[in-house]
Amino acid sequence: MESILKASNLTKSYFRKKGLNNLDLEIPLGRIVGLLGPNGSGKTTFIKIAAGILRHTSGEIKIDGQDSGVYTKSVVAYLPDVNFLYKWMKIKHAVKFYKDMFKDFDENKCKELLVFMDLDENDKVTTLSKGMMEKLNLSLTLARKAKLYILDEPLGGVDPTAREKILNAIIDNCREDSSMIVTTHLVNDIERLFDDVAFISEGKIVLQGNAEELRIEKGKSIDELYREVFK
Amino acid sequence: MKFDENIPIYIQIMNYIKERIITEELKKGEKLPSVRELAEQMKVNPNTVQRAYQELERENVAHSQRGLGRYITEDEEKIKMLKSEMASEFINTFIKGMSKLGYTTEEIIDILSKKLEGKC
Image 1 (tube, each protein chain N blue to C red):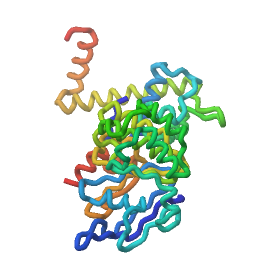
Image 2: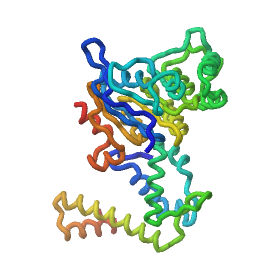
Image 3: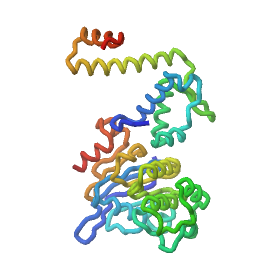
Image 4: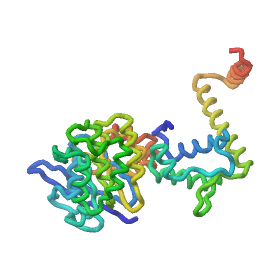
């Protein structure tokens, strides 16, 4: 199968500490992959390298066959787990900002998503609650027509109804010609969405596979498996 | 729908559809929802629904018509078979549970017939 991302022996050192330690991971096209691991396991480090925000120390990562750079940034849509919009912005300014930043940004689609998420484009971003902010960021990210979507903790701080909307938006937007990496430690809420899962611990992938096959093989839910791997 | 995440989700989707066929909520020959519709409704990965549909086709419970969608079988024998399969699954679970509690065959029959007659 064609792969959109391939990391081999990927290592990131922060001085003496290793953020990633010879990590190998391949992500085929058209899949939703759950990257699961506790705090400090290297999830966000990996994702930032994939998004082109951090440089790796050694090893290799190819996205759509290319080394990270201008091209890979143009095909990766990254949803960070922190706020990145300016305080003066209203939602509509954020939309315009994205439109200017990314060629593949579809403004109409973004507006549809905002309506779906019950967001008003005249609201200031500073007045949004954490959950609303999450919905806004996700709308902006999914409105790009990227090859690889990276969603870092899309369910953090979100109430159950908003959670449902976010899950729907993700299902609606997965296409055969793109893949998604979703990181989370709230495995239970989202495991039904994953084609494949990869468990990351101390900068390494310790277990990976097709979610359904793992359920058959281990007779456990991914959530239980997570608890077992990281106990 | 509530899932038991310990069991592969595609199997649960298959059972859900079979149940609805047996109870005639889904009529024979009726069109099934599209992969995406059902995925959204159930909040599961579309590939999982795809797999469930493929398995249903393999078991001849449904068949697809190119460009039109998937339809439930018109074969009544098949539907009857589904019903008896599902019934025997329930019964097996019941018997297993009762045996685990230490009931003998006679006691199970006795308690069941009393229950059905409304005596306990």
